[in-house]
Every structure is written in C-alpha cells, then in structure tokens.
Length: 310
Image 1 (cartoon, rainbow, N blue to C red):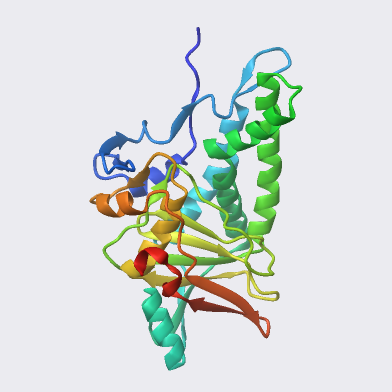
Image 2 (image 1 turned 120 degrees about the vertical axis):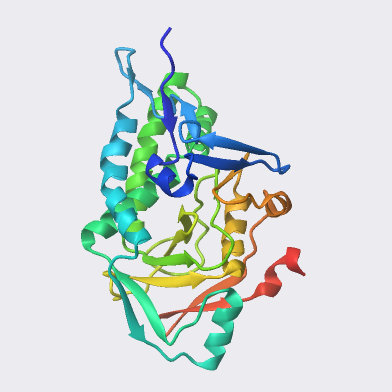
C-alpha cells in the first residue's frame, strides 16, 4: 500500500519568517497546552488535494500547481514586503480628532503617511496568494464536500473530484475580487505578534459597497500582516498604505484569528497562552465601522462594541 501524500495547507514559504532558529513553531491549543513543531509537522494533511483520474490513478497536480503558480511568484514579493522595499513617505497633517481615534486604535501617528509601491505583477501575485489561502484550507474543502454529500448521487471519489474543481473555480473569483481591492500593510511595532490559526484566513461578510465583497486580515509573518478592504473607485492601485501597530490593534487582529480557530493557533515568540485560552473560538468584536462619504472610505473605532472588554 502506498503512503498517503501529505500536503501542507499552510504555505511553506512563510515558515522561514515564523520559525525560530531551530525551525520550530509553537502550537497552542484551546486549553493552553503547547507543542513545538518542526516545519515538516506544520499544517499537513494526507491526500488533501489528491483527486482520482478516470483510470483510478491518484493525481497530485494541484499541490504542484499551488507551489509553482501561487507560492513561487509570491515568494520574492513577500521578501520585498518584509524588507519594506520601495517605502515612501508623504507629508500629512491630520486633524486632532483623527489623531485621537487612530492612536486609540493602536496605530502610531507621524507627520507623514507611509506607503510602498506595488507593480501590477506584484498585485497579481499577492491576489493569487491570498485567494489560495482562502480556499486551500482543509475546513473550506470539507465544507464544499459536505454540500455535495447533502445533494447526494455521487460516490466518495466523485465528491472529492468535484469539490477540488469547485475550489479552483472559486479561487479565480476570489482572486479577481482581491486584485481590485484596497491593500494595506500593518507592521508590528509593539510586543505582541500576529498569530495564525488552523482555521486559515476568513472573509468577513460584506459591510460596504466596494469592489471586493469582504475584508480580510492576512498574517504574513509574526511581524507583518496584510489587510484587504473594498476600495474606492479611481484610487491608485500602484501604492499600498503602511501602518505601524501597537499591541492594542494587534490584539484585535488576533481576536479575528482566534474566532475562527478550530484546534490550535501558531506563534513564534513566547506563546500568549492566557490570551489564547480567553478568546479561542469567541466571536471577534466588531469595533471598526466603515462607511463611504463623498467617495472616500471613512473608518470609525468603537471599542464599546466589544462585550468582553466592558
């Protein structure tokens, strides 16, 4: 009997940024218990992307496709984002009311705005990578399989095959929407790190009219995350805003991650055990409000909407 093919649903190119000097990552369970995993043990599942040919043979081309068409183009882009290559600054004098709100959110305020330049090729690589993160998670694939199982009339292998085809079809839809969205980088400026869970990343439900039907928090490394937001028409797609986050904002981002975690979360630094135990599986607070005003996206911060902080 052949050994099942083990697929990494968490892209391995990120391991070099998440792992410590021994190439290990902390895994934290809901009860606070810990394990330290090697890169070979992280986010693997047997035959996750394997489909069955008409001849009955197993085909693992999808895994190779993820590696060559998704991760390979994104790898150099990730390196450039981590190094903040092309960082630019533009003078900015916000109103005092805006300064208070941004600081309360946990974002550092400077007399300038920061941004990095994004080429069309980079935007395409980022969009494909994020879209793949949405659909290649085992939970997402099982959700599609469950849908086809309820319909009935298909065998187990047929359900797996059509579910993988649906996964790739939805990937293209997500990629198109994300490519036209607003990209924003958030850099860790405090002690807390960005966490990543076995739930993958979540598309939060539509909250505004825009070219993308969702917003996303995408941890790229413990020190860097990417936000995907519906963007205003006519904006410059060649720039990506940069924000430097203190512990408060990072904690809100991690609450989003923990709200969707299934069995565990990953960390590189000292594991935030008590934080994970408190918020694992708890709904993330809707503390950020958004609306369009005169063609511009306006953000409101409403910490009183967090029931666990009252």
